[in-house]
Amino acid sequence: MAERFTKSMARNIYLGGSAFFVLLFLALTFDTQVRAMPERDNRDQLTEEVVRGKHIWENNNCVGCHSIMGEGAYFAPELANVFDRRGAGDTEVFKSYMRAWMNAMPTNIPGRRQMPNFNLSDEDIDALSAFLEWTSKIDDNNWPPNIEG
Amino acid sequence: MKYESQRVSMPYFIFALILFVGQIVFGLVLGLQYVVGDFLFPEIPFNVARMVHTNLLIVWLLFGFMGATYYMVPEEAQTELHSPLLAWILFWVFAAAGTLTVLGYLFVDYARLAELTFNEYFPTMGREFLEQPTITKIGLLLVILGFLYNVIMTALKGRKTVVNIILITGLIGLAVLWLFAFYNPSNLATDKYFWWFVIHLWVEGVWELIMGAILAYVLIKLTGVDREVIEKWLYVIVAMALITGIIGTGHHFFWIGPPEYWLWLGSVFSALEPLPFFMMVVFAFNMINRRRRNHPNKAAMLWAMGTTVMAFLGAGVWGFLHTLAPVNYYTHGSQITAAHGHMAFYGAYVMIVLTIISYAVPIMRGRPYGNSNTAQVVEMWGFWLMTISMVFITLFLTAAGVLQVWLQRIPDSGAALSFMAGQDQIALFYWMRFVAGAFFMAGLVVYLGSFFIKGQASPEEEVRGPATADA
Image: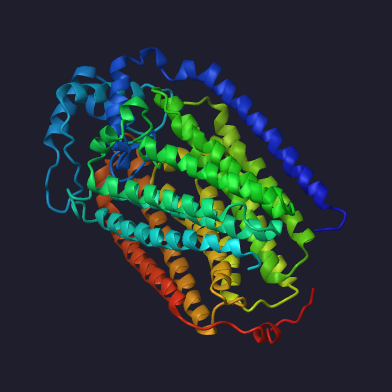
């Protein structure tokens, strides 16, 4: 680099640049969280059951195989839209599908990817279903592109 | 090595490499489970193996960063470490906590582990990369704080170099951002937003400061180029990293709830994120061209060049490939992401830790000019085997990802293949990825083997090097 460009100029770009973008990021975060998200994340539907479902989701490390809104592992299907894919967008259909599915695991088909049986009660499975249904209704800019996730 | 207390970095480096082996073993398990779905089921289900694979990576890189810091800070500050005893105590605490956590993953059912560690009272578990029990997270925070105290006390009492300032700024950022690991709101959209404050702002933010500082330090030592020049570069590189990377966090906000302006902000700023990595390549090669000495530790020089190139390819090019929102709409959460993740972590963070190990460990073993020529040749074989294997892992995962997107994402509902039907179609690429992974493991064994070769380089090598001092 040319000698005219001194170390203190470089330092000022570093300090000024990072301070500016940290502040900008904080301002954008404020706007996103305070103004925009309440309109988009469907939080008025965030029931006790949904919260319980999130804990069941976490306590069984579901994200270790599945993705949810595209984040997680890529070993098993995307679940943010499973309510639409397997429940056809109907709460009761989805709940009965989930109960049947969770209790049928593992399939034990040789050579196939296996999902453990997590020994969840019917109430737990219903809570998990409620969580996934709630998640499917977050406004995520119309992702995924199709029903397969 | 000028200060006796720098030696405390040795156990950190050794333990890091042990965990590295564990990480790759579990990587092979995962690679096989992708094609032989019931391999090790139900003993080690995929989610457990993945948790071990990713958590070992994070923990061993942290051990590597800590080792690097304990080695660099006293020498830069020109003073002994504030408390070598504290560094030793924290080493054992961290090693024990890390080992217990991994054993917990392997031998205790995850839901039971959550129960045993009272997760219900302070739930933080079950989120990707943050699977550790809350008690482990608190332990890690305490270890980092003790470490920072030790390092800052050392830096403050001595010479304040740019390398130390940037390194410590990065480490403070690492500690502060870790606090977001404790924030787990019941609203998934909010949870995800702040989860990225740990994940993205670590790897595409403050960790780049740590990487830049280590690179600058090693280049000062290996090339003998004037510190003023190197420090100027370092400032510009970390400035670019933060200027692009902070708002670049937006590329994770496309499809998890935040509003549409992030599609623009995330695309534009993350498209610029390759810049700091490109500058690191130019920086490293430029300094090496202008070198005032031919350091006989050629292996360390190879790692220093390699880390910049691979970080640019993995983090820069492979990141750019799928970072623009219209592309990411189709590739988000596909094997393209996995391809990028593998090469970026290897290139930027695995290789920078191996760079400082390659430079510092021979010195601590009483070989100030580096290992013997034979040992260096073996180490360089390890370098090439691991690096080329990683290139192939990335290429195969990219091919798998392109096909996955083509089959599963692009067609309309009804015409698109289901996830599992698509996976069956691309199994061949998963097999090839597994073979490349096995070669990586072989490279790691060769690399580790180089540590057991006796002898050291002699100072004459420096004199009869190819290029004379042309700076």
